[in-house]
Image 1 (cartoon, rainbow, N blue to C red):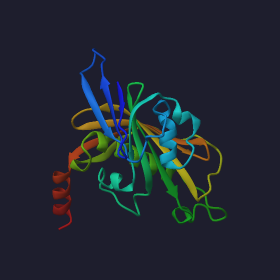
Image 2: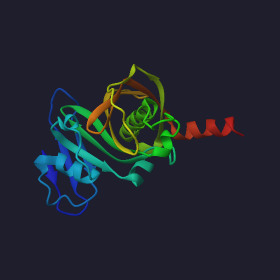
Image 3: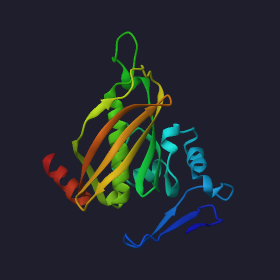
Image 4: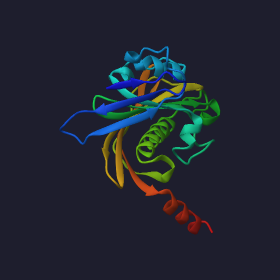
Length: 224
């Protein structure tokens, strides 16, 4: 069941009627006026939000619910800030039985200075950072946002998936798929995309979910 309200803050509600799973109703408030958007093509709404066409591979699923996160929403979800946090926007959605997120990042030439001396290129390290932050936003969002601090505690294989040189400045899209969610741990599978192609992937990132109050009390003790 899909409900789309007519006001400027449109509400999309999905009733999960799968009897094999716990019955649950999801309520996501989507920023912006969606009254003129064909709800059968939610990818159009998501691309309009990013202001960019997404790589074709990232638009494979049939989206049944979504939430668009601008900068202020992201700040209300995780605790990092600029200059470390260079994410622009993100879209969390549920499709084909999976929670996913796509986020956009802008990598500035200053972040790549010295890599290499003859011509700057974006290192795998920066793509990995985009992937890790994307997974962090997803698991934080699904665990109550600012109430928790997801710490990446373990990763699977990290690999570059292109031989092409990606030169800054460049807009990067990163995707994370939720693989596992438990009370204290979550795991995601991550990819990064630039210039229309996949440039990197992390097989798994495991996040330990720490209550925000516990985390910042511990940090205060360490640095005082």
